[in-house]
Length: 448
Ligand code: FRU
Image 1 (spheres, rainbow, N blue to C red):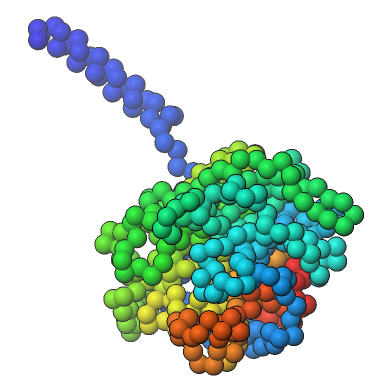
Image 2 (cartoon, helix red, strand yellow):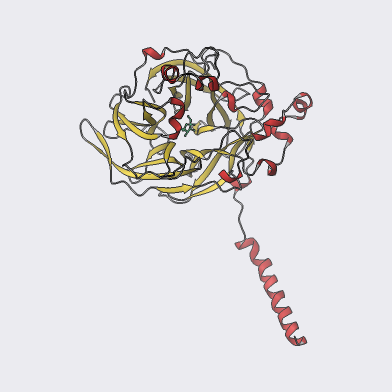
């Protein structure tokens, strides 16, 4: 290369670098306030402060006195049709709920492998009529559908967000999970309600491996994988719209660095034994922001909460707003707490003045509702409505001192006799700043 050519190319390079320096701050990647926000760590210290008391223990109920939502199907994980602001919706006088279901001859423990979403409608909000499966045969994505949420969208249509689990027509059951959506018109007569003109089902959110663990990153030592249970939330403070979901902290176990703040304060850490096996516990509550008004495109943001070394399954998260505060709820099983932590099957909650960051656990530990100690699997999948009504479904009752694994080893007759698969009596909780209390039991099937 001749010298003047070299000189020329040198000055061209310098000009390019100059331009780059000038333009980076303008066109370079922008980091939004949300991306900067601190993910809250639910710590071993928080959980260690947990006490079971009158304020957080649900009353025992008698399953045999309860009304089944369906005589042919077990149902669980129910949710109501909601307005954009989270309140239960009413369509031409009808209230609508959705629930996961399987025919009653399926072993309760196998229900997750065959789950299908059904709907029920009601004029009085207490007695529900079965509408059957929500989706037309073959329309839904995944080999089965797991929990979600439903809203009336801006076009006045039903918009259902759900978990597409596994792959359609798969030969062997798989457990990958993606968030999907579909919309439909709601048609009513005086006595019935149906959904018509379904849109094509679309996958809208998938794990990225950066904020949220992909199926491929899951280690053998990890007890479960989660990227599921979308919950729609419109922030009344900003009007922004989001999906919350259950997930796991990203990365393979060997690539996830230990941070002392996962355990708790320095003082707590001095005396606390953290068993090695707790590294495999990496539950999180994820969030994705809608980038269009049709709610068809979402951008993943860092998790709102992580429970590394604490808990592996933060199921069906949801959020309500009361006064200036956000209340974030999730439910989990006692066996999903990391070794060395003893906490019940229950509803857990956290509060903050902002949606992103600044959370602290309700009642210090996070525990809001626990099953009665002598009936530890009585109910599950609590959902907190904006007025403090909490719904759930009847899980396993009167299993004496058997744990959930032992229940699974009993005869099919035993398992079916002790499983509810129906709505549980609702509960009313009071929320005062960062403290909650179970106030009283409400009727079965009441969502408001
Ligand atoms: C909670 C749950 C959900 C999931 C569903 C699958 O009961 O584990 O997280 O969507 O059950 O059946």
